[in-house]
Amino acid sequence: MDTVTALRCEHVERPLGVETQTPRLSWQLQSKRLGARQTAYRILVAGALGKLQHGEADLWDSGRVEADKSVLIPYAGRRLRARQQCWWQVQVWTDTGEMLLSEPSYWEMGLLHPKQWRAQWITAGYPVKATTALAAPLLRKDFQLRHPVAWARAYVCGLGFYELYLNGRKVTDAVLHPAFTKYDARALYSVLDITEFLLPEQNAVGIILGNGWYNHHSQVSWNFQAAPWRDECKALIQIEITYVNGRREIVVSDATWRSALSPIRSNGLRTGEVYDAGAEIAGWCEAGLDLHAGNMPDALPQGWYPVRIARPPGGRLHSQLMPPCRVTGTVRPVRMHEVKPGCWVFDMGRNMAGWARLAVNGSAGTQVTLRYAERLTSEGDIDQTAINCLKDDGEFQTDKYTLKGAGTEVWEPRFVYHGFQYVQVTGLPEPPTLDTITGCMVHTDLKPAGSFSCSNPLLNQIQQAALNSTLFNYHGMPTDCPQREKNGWTGDAHLSAEQVLYNFDAAAAYRKWLDDFADCQRPTGALPGIVPSGGWGYNWGAGPAWDSAFILIPWYLYVYRGDVEILQRHYAGMKRYLEFLAAMATDDIVHFGLGDWCPPTPASYQYKAPPALTNTAY
Image (cartoon, rainbow, N blue to C red; front, side, top):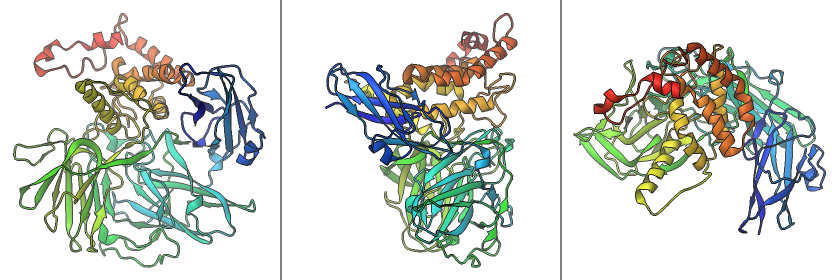
């Protein structure tokens, strides 16, 4: 039987936070008949599901259109307002004359103007000391509902990363959220459906903030610790509630919120996370918490403090339509061994990006340390020498957990990720088992778009390696590696982009990253070699062989996804870049930029092609 499925708006299934007045709609005709095809379509859009079900397309009725096109067809109906829910379905006529009707789908508009944000940026109000400067703050507020709720949304931006909680429950399964941007040009917010998380009367909202790329502190070659946007963690939260009787309620982040020090004592993308379970605050995001009680050590800020109003990050708010990072699977260690007394190394059996989940029993105050690496020394211990990029005395890819002494304690970090196959564990109260550690695979949740297999095991292995490399190097942007740099190197990304588009539904993710290019481009047209950049990579690390990602990836999105708008969106920036190259060239030869990077073997380094050849060719 023929069916119409996979309804998408702007490459995304049922997106919340659409910001364009002409969102593009796509669908698929699925059939087991050889040669089945669409001959005509009709798109119906209504402001409510009930209207759509009764045939009332009050927002747009395209009428019957004689065409086989089913990809990225622009909405052409009534002007859409902020927060508007748009229910739609499509009728399709096939080559047999049969008319098919899809199931309904929807998209929802975001906040379309800065004045629609009534919330204020807030940050921790407790005294910040050297021991707490890199800690993750808790922010919270109680609020009361007066009527039964029809639906509710939370509009949230937390920088660098955040987790949102309502009445003790985490609202989404997203991690390392939102995606990294050039924060003084653009910051991403999410629209979250929180209807089911609300209680009839008393409610509490809480948020935990991580440093991420916004408050990157470790000293490394790429100078993110000196990024112009760098500042303390902060949040912007606007909860909008519509009651059954039609009345509305808005809860916003403002000076009435409270803040406290979380058990996450420090967190850094390249260093790791330090957690003290003995400092947990029971019920911290539940209604009715006694805000005058504190259980923190005397040397640290105690109790709940009024938040401070924070300065904005500088960039304009845009909704994040690309998929978030998630824990997409777990891995059990295949073996473990004791390197020296009390020092255990677990082999996960595969290279991966993410973190380790720890299960441990012990007395309060016991600290367990986890260090991550991709290879071992000849003695069998972990070897971080090839990947440790820190220029200061901080520990690299190292997580620490201090027990509270309450039976089996299960913990995993929130605001870091590591590249590893091996995990060294020290400080365990008793000898471990293979159940002590579980590997959590973490990456942008790119869904499959295609698959490949054949009778040749080597080709299948290469294909699987490509899939693994793509996923474990995508964390809000395509990166070069998940352990040392975690940078969005542009050359690496455009060389793999066609493979990625064959294998993954990555169009929305690439569209976000191309906006990062536009944000990083200088008025001269110059681009950095890493995107996003905090200012590094314009004078070294760039050049046409890398910068061509800004032209090639939009072209691939057109070729593989039929996305013409992406070419229109960035055409001016592409043209400005070519004008920059013309100004930099001598007799039409481009001499700057990286050249034939990483020749096959060190012995062949003398045969490395000169940068003028490779960059002029690009």
